[in-house]
Image 1: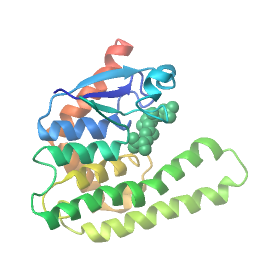
Image 2: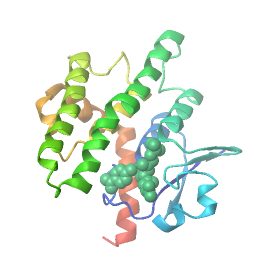
Image 3: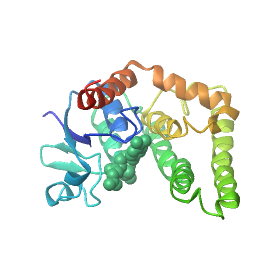
Image 4: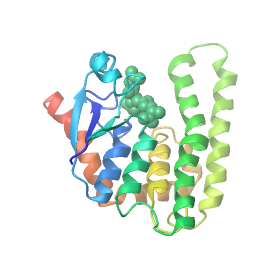
Length: 216
Ligand code: GTB
């Protein structure tokens, strides 16, 4: 059965691979699973039909027969668990790879999102002069720790896994900030992820949505 995912009809990043359907597209491409995409406007995302799938009225969702999922991490994990290629088969190594999915989403991503949200909503407020550097520092702390663990390895724990896919997507959120620049091994890690043919296909598919909508 071909899964159906949802994505932005008009992504604010103009299809540059930041919206979270990109994680799902990349995972599907890695395992060679074809998929369909239902594009949604911001209005449609908040309507009852979509909220029945996604209680928070967001993208991405994933439908496969009777199954409907609505968290990008859960969707990536589902894909990785049901197809070969994104998780080791050996149980201990598999659990460690899953551990990295959660580390990306629960430990590394939150300070990145908090920093970005504050920049969008508070940067003209008087307190931002103190708050902004503090949020930068929280991100740097996590990047330093991650950089130390990655060292000179290509991937976080052996072969490329769903943990790396999720971590690379989380780190890409910093692309426009310059914060990754202090960690050459993390920059190289993100570049290695982006160089994977499956990433390239997913990125092209997401960009094509914007290109088609804008007629460019
Ligand atoms: N925890 C959920 C998950 O991981 O699936 C979070 C899902 C989420 O944040 N979805 C966002 C959404 O639907 C899109 S991805 N937002 C619309 C809304 O809440 O009304 C977040 C996102 C959006 C846009 C950019 N961008 O343009 O750079 C980057 C990331």
